Image 1 (tube, rainbow, N blue to C red):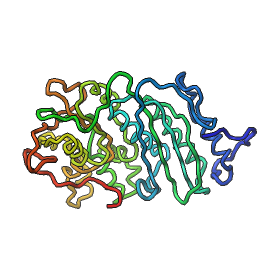
Image 2 (cartoon, rainbow, N blue to C red; image 1 turned 60 degrees about the vertical axis):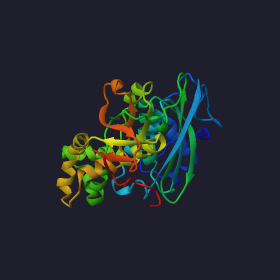
Image 3 (cartoon, one colour; image 1 turned 45 degrees about the vertical axis):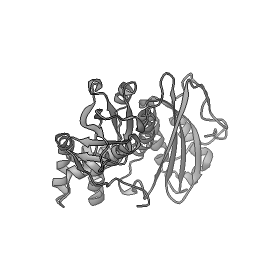
Image 4 (cartoon, rainbow, N blue to C red; image 1 turned 180 degrees about the horizontal axis):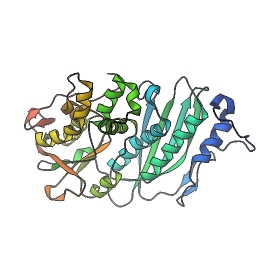
Length: 336
């Protein structure tokens, strides 16, 4: 993200990206970003960022594409910025790492309002700071729709990464955060886009998780030193727990009472939709809450984590079970 040309004139309310050009957009975005911290020697504004890292470097990337990952009908740019940052920061924390910096690439049509990208950057910078990182730079481009790509960097200074493959038979399966709420919120928005502005607390809570998830980064940091395996729940509890089970060669057995507790807050959405929606299905297969799923010794479950099951020796059914009964896969997949 290079600097705008000097002397970029002020812009009027309602200006579009096409009205102000690349330098005007850059000036607006740079104005939103906080000053970099001491570990960032060169921040946004040069050909590349320069920062000091300690330990192994952790890197991840993710995208949000208009029409595929969000719809204009209910898009709030500030919340979209939060979501873009959160889904990447969660992956860094799920590795047991400390976030370091974020690189943002943004493509948009030229008739996009400048206020949209300013508000997006405001949300992105806010969540980046909450997650313990800084915005290092990025790139801008035109495009047919809004396309957001983020690269997140983290560090492992004192311990190895927490992988999906470390779960052991006898481990407690634990969850920090929520599951199923973003999926319930999405179904509400798909059915009634105007619910984006609902004042009904039970529905609004679910919709907010879909529009701007807030992972519990502190909980991930607390368990990083004792977790045998960990994953960010982005594609659904059953699907992501199944990834741990497959990588670790164990069977992940969920507690049905715990699943009922996770499904209970979703009942309001099922009641509102009235179309045989099953809260347990949202809890099992709904993604994008960005809760954290981990396995630990039974005696090491930290404050803020909920025990939801137990790792068993791998069986013929393998994968994920509920009280020993296999769970049918159903998590989100692109190109499905």
